[in-house]
Image 1 (cartoon, rainbow, N blue to C red):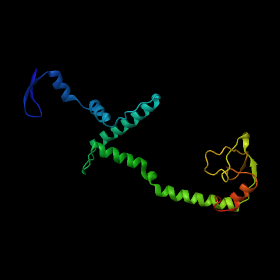
Image 2 (image 1 turned 180 degrees about the vertical axis):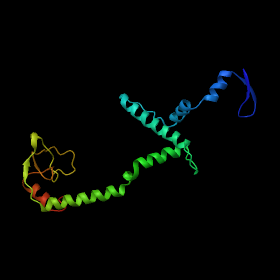
Image 3 (image 1 turned 90 degrees about the vertical axis):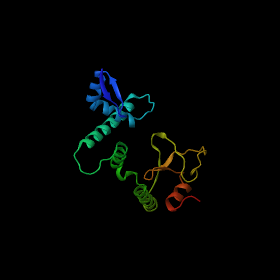
Image 4 (image 1 turned 180 degrees about the horizontal axis):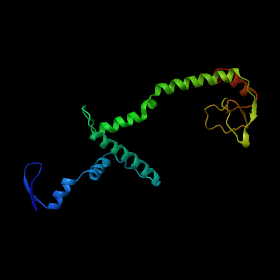
Length: 175
């Protein structure tokens, strides 16, 4: 037994093995403590998912430990702020919806221009598959009619005749 003082200043007698463990505790134990803070707790039948997320969190914890050991004069981030900054840096601007919205509108305008100005011909859908006509069925999920024809360039199902002509001549084909 060894006499020591705890964090409150009280004198305690503890076994020498505990004193030696607490003195040399470091790397693995610190890593395990930090790992438990952000370890995702989800159920999965597929073991590779658990292993993948465990490896990602372990890599992030190791990066945090390396970050804490660097000799930089500026103030260091705590563990939560470090993880938030890491996620923000990894994601970058990909979560910004404005760029995606602009690209979506440009693609839509281009598709509408191609749909009206270029030459299109009705074709049979390959492999004998059937689709809904985008003009007469529209967004009606319950319409049962399926057709075998489509525009090979636009890749949308269209009835041969009136729907095909309406789709390729009007900017807004829905009435």
